[in-house]
Length: 157
Image (cartoon, rainbow, N blue to C red; front, top):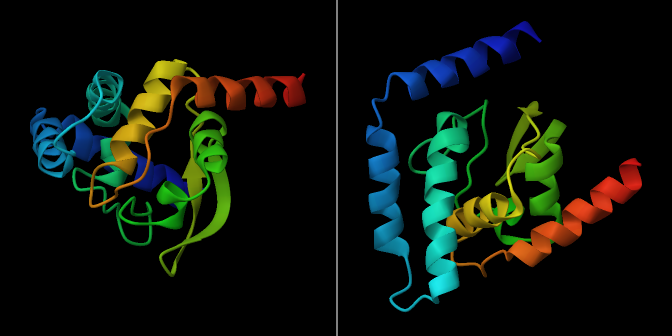
C-alpha cells in the first residue's frame, strides 16, 4: 500500500510540475492521429476527452499513453482500450483494483473510480483514448456510458 501511495504521489508531482505542456503535447498527438473526416459529435467528444485526459489521466498514463512500466499500464493498442466497450466504460466508472495483464506486462495497482465524470466526459475521454496513441477504434457514445452507468447503479442498489 505504501508503494502505491508513493507511486500515485510521484505521478501527481509529474502532473503538477508539467505547467500544462503535457496537455498541449497530448492535443498535438491527437491532431496527428485523428481521422480526416470526423462527425461533429465525435469532434466534440475528442475535444472533451482531450481536456478530461489532461485533467485526470495524463499523470499516470502519460502524454503519449504509454503509462509507466511496472506502475501504470499503457493505453497504446491494448485489448483493454480497443476491446469490450462495456468493460472499458466500467473501468472508468468503477475503477479497477488487483492484478491485470496488459500487452504481456502484469500490473497490480489501483485505478480510482471516476463516476463523478458526466456521461459526456466519460464518452469523450474514452473516444479520445480509442482514437489516439495509435489506436483506431470506434468512438464510445454518451448513450453507451449512460447504459453502463444505469446497470452499475441498478446492481449497486
